[in-house]
Image (cartoon, rainbow, N blue to C red; front, side):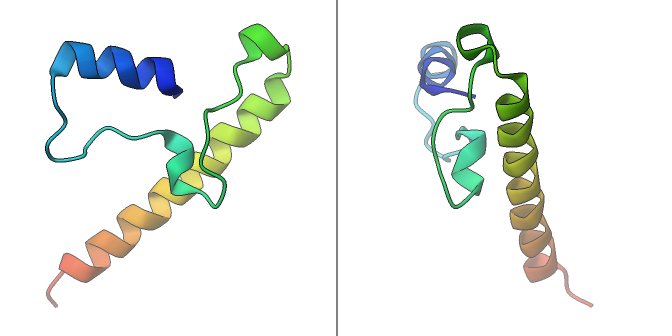
Length: 71
C-alpha cells in the first residue's frame, strides 16, 4: 500500500478515527511505501516489501492476541 491508496481510502471512508488504515510497511523497521513494480519493474523488491510487511503485521497481531487472551 502506498500514500495514494491511503488518500483514496480516506476519501471513500472518511476520517479514520480508530486508526484502522495503515501502510503495510508501517509494521516493519523501515516504514515507507511498498515498491511499485509498475514503475520500477522490480517485482523482487515488491515481493520482499510485501513479505516483510506481512511478517510484521502477523507479529503485531500475535502479540495482540496473546495480550488479550485470558487463560
